[in-house]
Length: 92
Image (cartoon, rainbow, N blue to C red):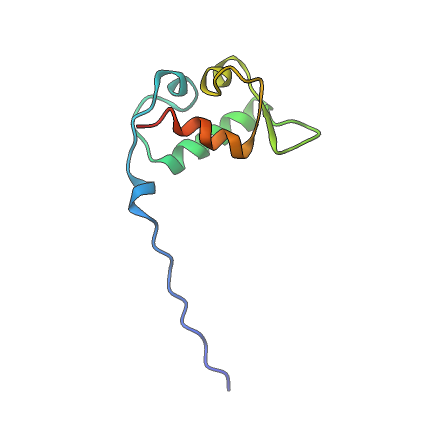
């Protein structure tokens, strides 16, 4: 008989759960009330999918509309990895 390994549930980092203030540019996309970084990312992806802004050929890229271009510093296309870096500038 093999003993089962005890699996401990992973605890979320409290820093990720702390509500953050959102800039005016980002508030157009995700709303203006303070929310945790994880929720910001969820809402951003919901916006991207709803407006079909994910590049059809290279799924890692996001083609910004007017609202996202303000968040992305004027860039028309950003990678999903670059997106998180650019969005963090709009959170405090």
